[in-house]
Image (cartoon, rainbow, N blue to C red):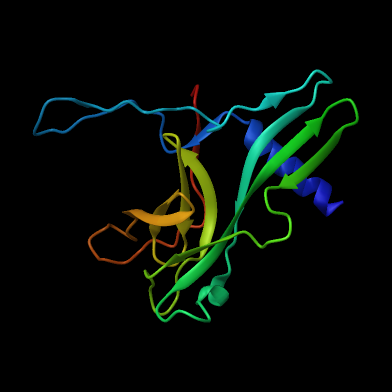
Length: 181
């Protein structure tokens, strides 16, 4: 039952037309003219594959939040997580969902970072797409990382409180806005 529910939640999150962040296409700077930035709202990043029998195959990915176990056992001052990719197939005629991992035998690709707070880091709580980029959130450091070529690239640090102190926000999930809102 729990596997079926998990599969249903994964399918719902994939098929829902959502993105990370606000759907704005421009920002205003009071000291300068209007700055326009094109936002690529393509979601999901890869198109689903539709089959003649009505089945639909989606590209999916998962990431691990290892909490205190994210410290690397073999590299000093390094924190790790695992990232795994695969396909989810939904067959409406049978009401079946199946998942096929790219590398079934492994735990996934090992992602690592040297960024931490109080000896903790790479506690990656969320995996989202935004502007055709794959992003993960570190709930200890407040960093948003881009995942590029299976490497964590620090992108943005979200500060706690009013943003005046260099203290990372404890971010566990991404706020999502419907595209057509």
